Length: 87
Image (cartoon, rainbow, N blue to C red; front, side, top):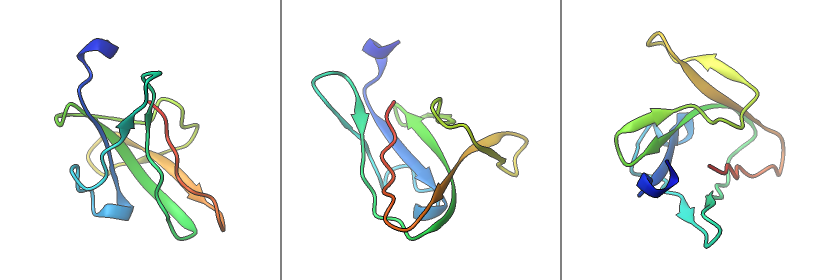
């Protein structure tokens, strides 16, 4: 439920899975956004809702084994392709 969503962050290979390193910002249209400058490569990531619930990116078409019996979203960054996920 969107009304219950107080915070969203993204954690992944690019920030050593630090759930507090990259919080998203909520727009007036209730869209959560972030822009990160990432080097070209493949990155696994998840969103953290309300600082406790880890989820894969519902908009991501690619996933990878997270090594814990679950899945992580997978992002392939080409040269000059910033990460801008929306929740």
